[in-house]
Length: 332
Ligand code: UDP
Ligand code: MG
Image 1 (spheres, rainbow, N blue to C red):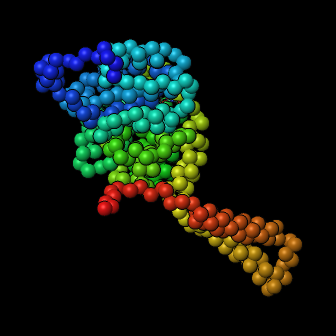
Image 2: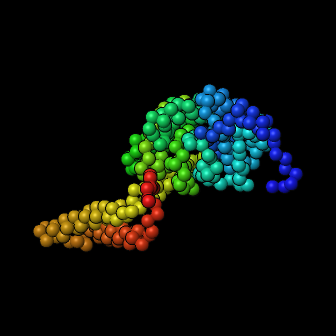
Image 3: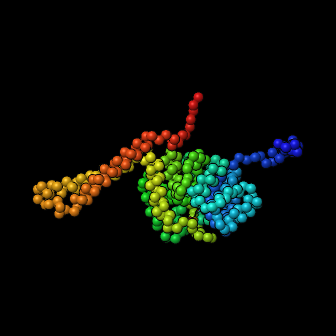
């Protein structure tokens, strides 16, 4: 501390304290954005209207994912007017997952809410999400029951949600919704990278957290355009495989490959057995049965799958056990 520092008058300080007790931030709103200059100002006003009614101290963290328009300028302006609105700006575009991940690390609230910046998500839903969270959940997902998006997006999305729900065993109807509320500990040690933001409820569920969903209103995009093209579809499907592996099967790869391998092997075995029997009984030459080759192929592929599963098991055994999520630890 420098010498020129002047201690404030004690009385004055106390008075200030009484009038404005420092409030601990309870809710952090994290908003990833990429080129959304026109939406930011109306969005921040709408958030203020919605959250001021809630009476809990909050902060809003904008994460500018390398915008090339005037988004950063608008963010500076918003921050200048109201210090509750904070922002981080990437030098280049890293993707929504990266933006969320960095936002999560900065958030200090006991509850962390995420939403999109494009005015499609309604800030008035935030208090409802939090209310639901407080009835005993760790993650509340906003389900865009009535969506205002082009059909090129809603149909792949339906398929994606159906497949993800089926394969992960979680009954959600809108995994990829931007609007979600989390208890702090859920996101604390969650690794969000690549395009994993689509699977946050899955990761949370597999870590043992209670996940649920409520319907929320959704608006059509007013300004700008969507940042995800058709690539969202196959990226999503490939990521689903990754997620299944890192959650469901990471500790038991043989259960995945083994089942696949056994089914393939058996199919090949039965096909070929049939052909051999026909040869012995009916004297049909095997050289006239192209299906025989298919059977052989199935048998070989089946053995391959099982072997890959076994290799996976060996790798799993040599990996340190760091991926268990601990709820509580008493150790004295
Ligand atoms: N977004 C981002 N980085 C990106 C792409 C998108 O931060 O690389 C933000 C975007 O600005 C928006 C949110 O993620 O706030 C959702 O994007 P978008 O509205 O384009 O997705 P959609 O609603 O079409 O699924
Ligand atoms: Mg959108």
